Each structure stands twice: as C-alpha cells, then as structure tokens.
Image 1 (cartoon, rainbow, N blue to C red):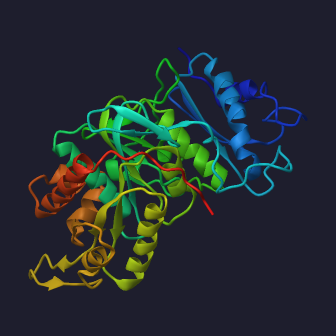
Image 2: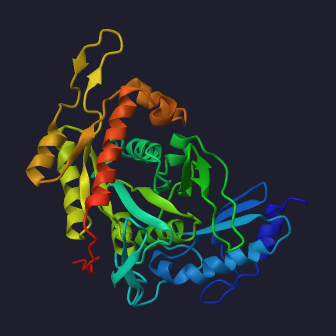
Image 3: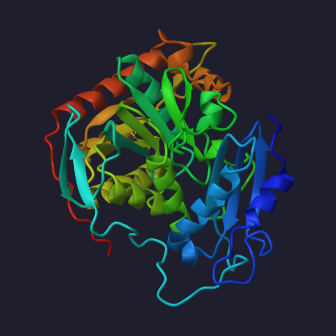
Length: 389
C-alpha cells in the first residue's frame, strides 16, 4: 500500500469547514505541525484559546477526514492556540482557561483496589484502571520526571500492571527517559494504543508532536490534551497509572483533580528551602482539591563521590523529611544525586531497569512499596465537589 503524502492530507483537510464560515481550515491557516511517518499522521489545529473547549468536534472531524485516506494507519490531531490564532474570532460568553469544562452532570467515581467502582458526585473513572496517582512538584528542575519513570518501573517490579502517562504537556520528557520514539497506532475503535517498553504502557504528547515543537497553549488547550491522553488511549487493565504532571499548580493539576478520581499524589522536592517552599504549595494544592498526598520524596538528597566515597550534601539534606513531619505527610524516601541515575536516564534505560540490584534501585523500590501500601490501606472515599475560587 502506497504511503500517504502531505499533499493528500492537506487536500482531505480542505474538506473540513473552518468555524464561523469563511473557507476551510487549511485556507484559514489553522493547520500546522503536520508530520507523516509510516502511515501515522499528526498535526495541530490552531484555534482561539477562548474557543478551545468548543473546538473538539472540529478536531474529530479533521481526524476523520484524514482517516479515510488510503495508507493512513493512525491520525492524531491536537488543538493548540496562539494569541489571536488564525481562523477564529472570540465571542462573548466563551469558557475561559482555568474554569471547569464538561464536568457538570457527569458521574464521579472512586475505584476500589479490587476494581469495583462507586460513583460519587463529580469525577469519572477511567475504565480498567484501579489507581491513578500523580507525581508532581512545586517547581521545575527537581527530577520529577526521572522520579516518575523510576517509580513506575519500581511498581512494575512488584508484579503490578503499570501505565505511565506523561501529562507534562509543555515539556514532555518521558519519551527520551524511556528510550521510546515513533508514533502510536490506533485500535479499531479509533483509540490510541500506548507505546510499550520495559513492561510499561506509556503515552506522551511527545509521541504526537516533534521534540522541538513548542507547546504555546493556554489553559483550555492543556485541559483538552490531558483529557484526550487519559480517555482516548486504550490502557487496557492497569493496577496503577502513574501520571507525570508539569511543575507548578496550574491547569494540568486542576484538570487531573477535577476529571478523574486520583488515588493520591507524590510530591518530589530537593532538600533546600527554596524548593521546599514550592513543594509546600503543591502539597497544599492537592489538599485543597481533596486529593490524598501519599508523601514527599527528597530527590538529589545527597552526593557520594564515586572516587573517594565522601558524602556531600550539595542541596542541604533532610529538608523534605522535616517538611513532611511538620505537615503530617508521609516521607517516602531519599534519592541520591548520582551520575548513574543521570546517565541511565539520558540513555533511555532508567536505573531501575538497567541496574535492578543497585542501591539507587533499592531506594526507588522502597518508595514504590510505601506508595502501594497506602493505596491498599486508604479507605474508599467519595470524591467531593470541587469549587475553584
């Protein structure tokens, strides 16, 4: 079967009318970032940020138009936005970034360790997934993604079925950390198949857009993308889905808290005071939306010289443990600053998989065991109504 060309894809997209009339989405300059590889197609549709939640039918229409072409194996379209994006014009009364979208009237739920779900007013479970946990940080640069990847692998080493969702829309790093490239294919039901490596099912925005493509998105776009990555992926049956969130306390975190019954959050921090201030903000944010905080991990906790064996507390030491004690939150463990963790991460062979008997892997597994104990011990609680003030 002949491969589909960019010209054929653009011709198909010319059959998709632009919103508010005035031509098609190609003529209006709304299509960007077109990528074609081995029959797998991806592109962005630029819309006004205020129109984001209303543009989902347009996105699906564009995907369906391309799916009909011979030689197309999968299609992934994402909504993106720039200020004053071409092809759209703002209207009064549109949903604004940061407000809850599409959540009214839906059933909430929490899932029991045995797989049974109970509905409660507000959040909708993802079918087949028993626990969803968020790995978060109050600021960037603390090793959150490296921790999320190794935590997922450590949970898998306990015999669990584990998925890894890279929800860091602005800076997806999981593809590189996991050593995965290429694009996901689709199921007959038009869901994305997660990529698989080292026993994990993995999905990331990094599989959909080129690595050097900036995500110039506002709140509604981020919310839409995370919802798609959660609900339009065939995760199958999982014991745990580990979600690597972007740093901070913004739209991505609120979207996760509002749309699915999170079983808990793991906060990653380094030991110094400036990082702990931001970690405290992240912890309090999850508490405000009534998501259990499973504990704090102190990353880059200390450095042991590979030559002399001397220990240096480069970023101080023990700050996260003290913070956890003051806040009444479990302290999950210390992960050292070590060149082996950096090298294996850069190589796409995380240390838990590459060196299963190393002391670093032992530290990650201790964190995973503490998390899993809490997931099984915590009582089943109805998800509350979330009010953003």
